[in-house]
Amino acid sequence: MRFTLNGQSFDVEPNDILRKIKNVEPENGRRFFIIVNEIRYPIKQALSIATNLPGAAFPTSTAYNVLSRLGFTIIDEKVGGSNGL
Image 1 (tube, rainbow, N blue to C red):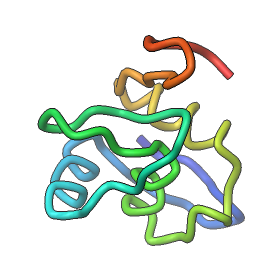
Image 2: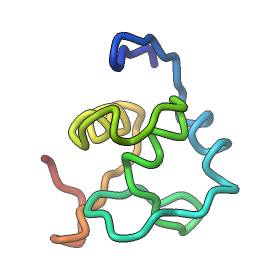
Image 3: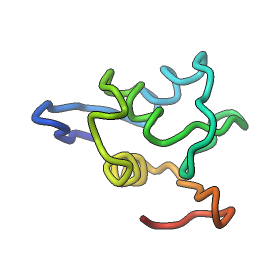
Image 4: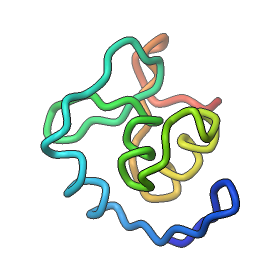
């Protein structure tokens, strides 16, 4: 999937994220996350890894939208299930 973030174009597929994230320690204390190999990864961390941009470079809503369009289920820590922003 091609998308633009902060003026940069990215072409990212779900397998790119799965491959890059598998040896990364997940951050703690985030509300929205995806599950990869039974490990919870914050969505901003996942998109940051995929794009090599710091998480501060984009809002949570952007990570939510991109990862959702890539087919990832976003889990909302506060409600215990999938939820929108």
